[in-house]
Image 1: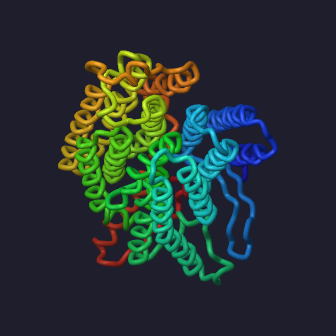
Image 2: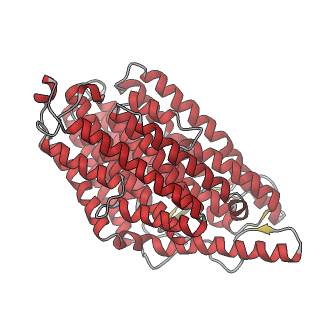
Amino acid sequence: MTDSFPLLSLCLAWPLLGALSLAFIRDSRLAKRGAVLVAVVELLFTVAAAWVFDTARGDFQLLEDYPWIPGLNIHYQLGVDGISILFLPITALLTLMALLASWNSVRQLNRFQLALMLALESVTIGVFTALDLALFFLFWELTLPPIFFLIGLWGIGAERRHAAMKYILYMLFGGVPLLFGIILLAINHAEYTGGAIPQDLAFSLPVLLNTPIPEAAQGLIFLLLVLGFAVKAPLLPFHTWLPTTAMEAPTFLSALLVGLKLGVYGIIRFAIPLAPQAALEHRWLLAILGAVTLIYGALIALQQTNLRRLLAYSSISHVGLVIVGIAAFNLQGLQGAVLQLLNFGIVAGSLMLIAGMIQQRLGSTDLVHLGGLAKPMPRLTVLFFVFALSSIGVPGTNGFPAELLMILGALQAYPALAMVALFGAVLGAAYMLGFVRRAFFGPVVHDSVARAQDLRPRELALLVVPALLVLAIGLYPQWLLSWQETSLQAWSQRLNATTQLIAEARHAHRPTSLGMPAETDGSI
């Protein structure tokens, strides 16, 4: 059923219209103000979508469904549920923060840079709202051109063009198995219904959730989807693009890349629900991959002397913890995983923006050029410390309930991996607090540090909002978890139903062909 007012289309189209309108604005300062105004209005639109969302329902809401390519049965289909709804305001907030952070750092082609940022926001909203897999793949690939130009034209490193090319090649490599998985899902639906190809292909997520898939095909589809999403997550061994990008790209873009984990979202949204039997059989692979990524990222972060590279490996390590939470396949683990994904946008993005502010003032984020930052920049130090405490999961911050839920979920499914997760948390505290001690405290030994300016009013304003969210979610996480609970329960029930069917099939010694049980409504 299509919603009467196309609110999601408005959220998707508004930043793109803003990007196009910048072509008619010649004054650079006016273009900056216009881009920020567009981002503020977009934030209001996404908050309105979250406001009208009915948290008591676990199905897709704010639906829009129109034929797009009838010959291939591809639709312009948008919708959100409790898993995806909060990613819209987080995306809008992080984009607004990135625009404000780049206010004085971009001095050439600034209208083009602003337009690319708004276009990237638009297609990212599309990734979180698309329910047609062909439309989702289109938005997924459309994130690449803006990022390529933002890295290559406004990167802060000498190897920025190499970093841009490396990012594109990695993402194109991940897109190939993802596209093959989507095509196999569509063909399986046509074969199951006895239809013809291409007229009876199906790319709609609600339709595919109710389409049984043969056991052998499920395994292949699951591995293809996970491979495609793992590259962008990133998980080992596909992680090397992120540290390179963090060092070479502009920090306002790095904040978006570490704050919005589209690959992990894809695993939750598509890979596991569409191939539940294969997901259950390969959950050990997900759990081990997550644990190895968690420990590897933390150990490498311990060795870093550059803040931006440390934050990149910290992000990789936290992605590993999220995968461990997802692989628990229970409500607690999944709640913690989704909450942590939302936290990335608030905490990891803010930390990277602060690193950019240090880079802009001192020309470096290497420890050798830092030391004693707390004396000339007390406000920056306080806010960095708040986000650092959240990153390591200190009680009272939003990182604590997320990590607690993931560890509790892992403890029920894989007690040994729960111990690995706890060890990873200890390593996280070691590398983050160790860097804070060496960079922010102690004597000031460089004149550039002594002369460094503290946060300007604009910078202070853009960081205070996420800092308040860190404390609000940490002290009362239920107001955020309530948006997700019903949809995550439906997601968990789908896997439980699959587990029962597998047990019955094995008891009867017969092969299984599992999809969504017929009596369900297709929600996840």
